[in-house]
Structures are given as structure tokens and as C-alpha cells.
Length: 132
Image (cartoon, rainbow, N blue to C red):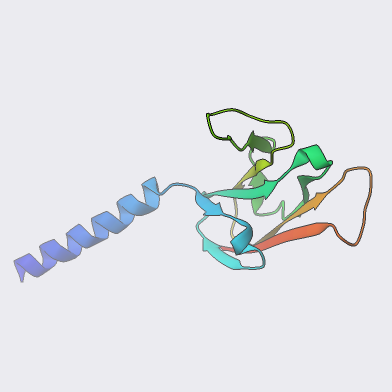
């Protein structure tokens, strides 16, 4: 009986440590349209491919401000080419960070477009969060 109680206590301790020290939730284009369950306080990182040299870039279209908060501005990292060099015209990755600050359902919508025009070919990235 004592061993069983010890094992249960150990498993619960591991679960609690994982909740406290778990890293950000990483989402990519493959997660577009999905619903994700997250805990309040979790960081959400969305990384999407793009090429700003074409005039297109990812931008925040909207997000649920009642339960999500954007952390900083969008960051862009150009893809490295062989030899560790950056070349003109090469794409990269756009990164957005958010934090789940309240419970409920929230949504993030990002748009890939040229800032000076709106067309039917603009890409929309949308994810929904069930925040506990």
C-alpha cells in the first residue's frame, strides 16, 4: 500500500512539474484551422514561411483580446543558404508570440498579403484556442 501511494505521489509531482516548466506551444502552417487546448499562462508561438522580398508579409488580422495577449512585435528570420550566407530574394520565417491570459475560447487570425492591397489571393491563417 505504501509503495502504491509513493508511486501515485511521484506521478502527480511529475505532472505538476511539467505544467509549470512546459515551454511555449509551437504552431506552424500545418495547424491552420485547428482548435488547440491550452492552459492560462501558456505562451503560443506561431511560425509561418514567407518571403517579404515579394512584397508579401504575415501580419496580425485579429485576435481575441479578452483571453489572448500579443507578446512583442512580429519577428522575421531569413533562411540561411549553403555556406551560412543570406541572399537577396530568399524567404524565411515570420514568428508571432501570444500569451493565454484568461479562460474561454480565443482565436488568432493572421493574413499574408501586400500591405498596400487586398485581393482574393490573400492567405488567412486561423487557429482557435480553448483556454482553461
